[in-house]
Image (cartoon, rainbow, N blue to C red):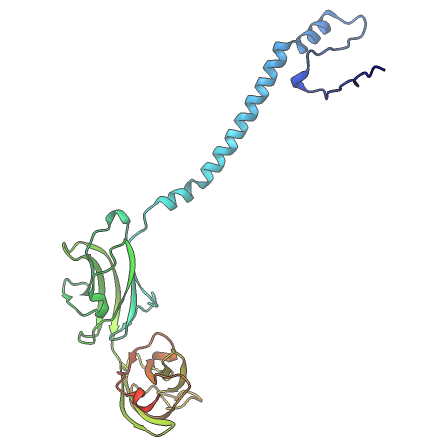
Amino acid sequence: MTFRAPPRYYNLQDSNTISFFTVLPSGCSAEGRAAAQLANDPATLLNGSLSAAAAAEAAQLDAMKARLDAVQPLLAALLAEPEPALTIAGLDPANPLVWMGVQGQICFRIPASANTNPKGLVLYLADSTTYYVNVLGAGNSPMPADYQGCSNFSVSKGVAAGKYFIALENSATGSLFVTVGFFADKASLACTAFSYATTFGTVTIAWTMPVARASANDTVWVVNSRGTVVNWFYTSCKCQKAPGALAVPTGSFSFRVFKGTVPGGYVFELHPGGLDPMAALAPNWIPWAKFGW
């Protein structure tokens, strides 16, 4: 018995088309025959196919170019070097105030191509070439060698209240990178007395605020070693219920603090308006560990 392989069928595609035919009516004109011959001419068909492919390729290239053009601004922004900046954490642009003696953070950013070392911070009087040496606490140390970084700083209470700016400079050449301006003012807070009992202590806190900056909402916070506020009072009323009618720029108050579950005792902070940042931190001379706190 002989088996015959089944016939194979293929989908009609341009790639396997051998020729095209046009069925014309009988008695067609010479012009009709010429047009049909031209339409079925392999060269004409090839040229049409090539033209269509070229148009599709051109359209694709135009679309790719449009996408590249759209990302050019982003690429330029990514490749551009940053503008020089010197910023103080928490500084209000509308009221740039720095409290002297209070530690803060200052950060810088300069173009990498302009970065030279060593870099340092210098405190200047505003609109002046007068500057102060070693009055910025931790900020007196050399700044990070990278083109950006941060450091702690505090303006010394030894300088007068007034307008200043801090300059980031090359410490060797004095070349200026960038500055930040502010008004520096000073307040004070002190623990003037402390007596101890088994489970509580009585502390006396004295404060002084600049008269022009004092408000009835100024508060003193009692903060444990974990940074949690465990007690507070308005300086205007020495209470918590409601602030007094008038600000009390200078005063003192004795109150009790109790031994808590968090070891390490407490610190006392003065907060203008009851808000951050704090204006003064009382020196912590109380030997809390001696009392088992």
